[in-house]
Image 1 (tube, rainbow, N blue to C red):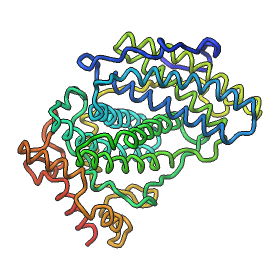
Image 2: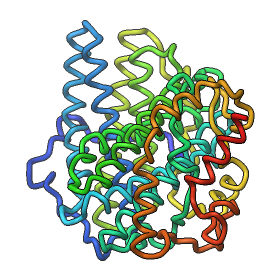
Image 3: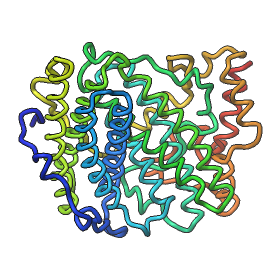
Length: 420
């Protein structure tokens, strides 16, 4: 079934304002929430935050007072939507538990996007980031287990927990985090929606870690957030660089609003919690009207019809959270040793020994990084690291428990061989 928000009737803007009791929503119950209900909430919070911040930045770069007023009106509703979604997360869910939800989003949302990406280069971009976020899930899971809480209670049976591309290896010179941009007119519209979605999710993760990373008291936990927060900044650079830089502000506004419609429509069809499903339906009705207003603004101000770049028939692929265990395992087997050189993603053995990657690594990893320290602490306390390997041993022999088992030793050997 296809979905075309341009042909749907939305809720008039003057009927979208809600009072405080409608926004201060009862959160989900920790012992009842489905793992993918949690990931849908985290994702839509990120999508709403991205739209709000985009609207603020657009308002700062336009002199049209009428457009500023329209942006302010729709942005106020977007802010209410964001509060309603974010307030679904209960206060008793700890920061680290919430963090595992964020990383499960990064794994399974990115996996869906990669598997539904028609452009091979962009698919590679997503697969590259996925393996790094997969490793972050493993590091935070070991932290949560050390705190006496079971990580499986967060991810369920849907996402494995085992080393990805080790975080120690992810630190690159900034010049190697820029990718080739797409062109909206030339690429498949699915690619546009994919990019906006993943960028919003990664940007929210970056923002989340920037704000909560200093809350733990344990220095190792603080260090882990510090290190992975730096990688999330790299990921935002990685993903934002694939966006079309030639689009106007109004074209971006239309695309953002279209993306919100698509995401709420997607999650409306997948949600298993009736109460939260009703929120997705309400917000979809609101976003359809926001899109209509954005399209009308583009026609009035730029004298351009958004139909030039929007799909006439709409979209027929909803975003779906599903387990991706076999897919991720195959990526690990094929791409775990990949890094980047300028805009290309390459195996580390392609780098010359004087490449800036090795100089950057030597600088930031002069001492053992927290992502390795947390695993060593778990081994010292429990005799082994925490893993949730439902599909068998790790697909990379050197990262198995019965192999070296140490990502630090593994990557030191890989990096040394590449540099020699």
